[in-house]
Length: 614
Ligand code: ADP
Ligand code: ZN
Image 1 (cartoon, rainbow, N blue to C red):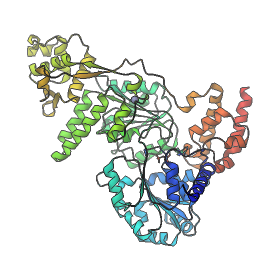
Image 2: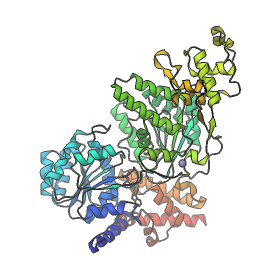
Image 3: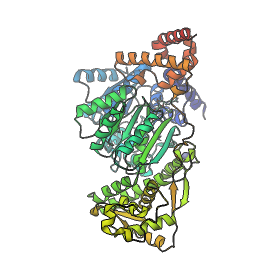
Image 4: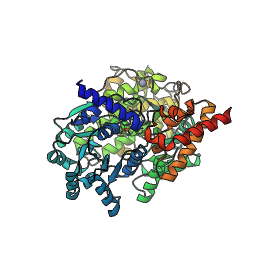
């Protein structure tokens, strides 16, 4: 490193500590910060929650002039700016939500060099008037957030993003940093090409989210109520009062599930595209601003959620792909504290997703790609190996067993299911490939019911040959037959099971079948709980008092609670009980501005509670 770069790194660390109150950069951040601060272009690929914002915020403070941050997430700008103002950083935003007077005031401040960071919506920035304004101002750097929005193939495509190459043409000397959490190589190439970033240095972080614990459990069968009971049990087991997101496929199921959870005393609200805009916005705002709100949603709820303390993401239905699963679960635990990604899944889910693909209007090629993506996801659901190894492997990243997923904590067995598979496939065949799993299972288990009697299926050789396995075990077998492509579901015939080509080898005794047997439920492994749960009772009292104080501040100032201080910072304060401003200043998340603004109140709370407790 040159002497200049060394000096820059020192200044960067000083700024990180003084302004943001953080003791050290996270992996990857420092190299990006110094590269951009020196005037280099960068493409930053980092998973959600890894800390992308600092990668342009610190250079913004190190360079002359104001950083212009392009973001499509208008709904977040006010909170992002509020968070920076709390740190004593001069920030503002320009988007369609501002009236003319407020916008004019921001423009004046920008032109006069009174801002460190300006957040702008892309359509706004591209207006000739705004580009002229940029011409007159001194620009420290351009940050292009959510850079994958240039990709015409992605679901977040924004046409205006294609025009952002104008920034490079008009201001070739101003460094640009493009940032995204989208991992796949094709999108990366598109970003480079469309934003003219060929000369940029590419920084790729690991996409691992070590604090997220992945778990995929067998769905209890029966009416939908059973999966919901599983969900409630999951929430009761350590997530009472936590903020969470529950994903469902249909609007109706969203409404029903939200109502059901509310009936169980969970502070849950629905969110889907069929709701009035006002109701949707209200849900999102409550979720973002208050503690412990649960949103039950279709995937319409996603982009634009920037809440750091979401403690779990639960899936009641299968996502379409590993990309979707990863993006949705990635909304948990952005603050780095323990979080859960929990999914319940069964045969009906496989059938439902396959039907959606079959019935879509897409071209054959599209259906083929969709099927391949679904199969990769089913592979993840059925694996007996580490979920994280599988997930990261899908994105081209090698890793070792994680110790923080259900399969690592309670390894499932892989059992030789050849005999069971053969019986199940025969039963499908002998009953004429006209029935769904529930009926075929009854036949296998030798159930005496009217329907079976009417069809004369009691006479079949397969009748009762499966009495050695219980119903749940058979359901798992049928699910895996479909997931492994040995049986298929005929959507034109009310979900009747049929034999698929590869089943022949199994029936002829030429191929074996291995299946996954979930570990017993009881063995969950030691649970790392949220920061607060690890506090001793005395510290817990102070933590609660601090939270109450924070809520008051947040309400008075009209900002989200986490913008005042993060839970993690409150927990650290509760643990160490700083009795002086100096001691408080050493806690992560307490920078100079927050020390100034809240130091006295916090120290007196810490002292007060100490006095009460002793
Ligand atoms: P991203 O945009 O990549 O999803 P953010 O920039 O919102 O992530 O950062 C996620 C969280 O990590 C924030 O709460 C932020 O305060 C915290 N964070 C980022 N960098 C650091 C650091 N060096 N030290 C401590 N906390 C950090
Ligand atoms: Zn694992």
